Length: 101
Length: 101
Image 1 (tube, rainbow over the protein chains, first blue to last red):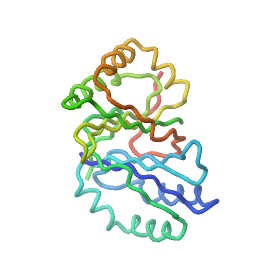
Image 2: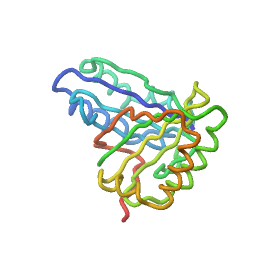
Image 3: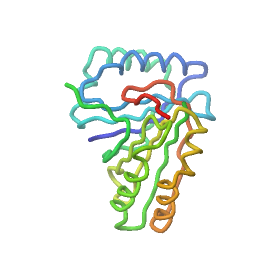
Image 4: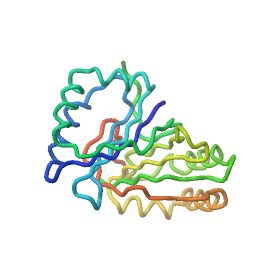
């Protein structure tokens, strides 16, 4: 498995819009076992995206999906900072869904 | 929903042992919608734990579960640093399991 923890800071007032963009783009990505979008509890302009994939290749392939390309294009206009906090190898999880391709 | 992203650094050589401890303790926690244990891709002594709960109360209650208390006791001996990277309010997720109490 391959994982990513990202901290995304939006321009003021744009957090809810970014959450909607991610919900639309990430609903059905092949090889994605978990994708959680969360508001930071203290910073009102920040979200956390935590992802688990069956492989890095599946993640990389997702970047070419039309829905994801569209989301990246829309997000670019309202993201002030995107930080990869960690790249990981998930080894165990409760709540991971079964792989589907 | 309530979430936590934690970075846990172990004493050298103790990472696999900590992963086993977490697998045993986190397998069946009421109100836990997702619990992913991941190795950091670059630091061989670090793991990331990302959690999603139906509420902060469920998380807090889990700390009193015998399996979790046992894990914390065993972990204390091999953890060199525990850092809460973020407390979150998850708003959407693919791969979250249904709540069960």
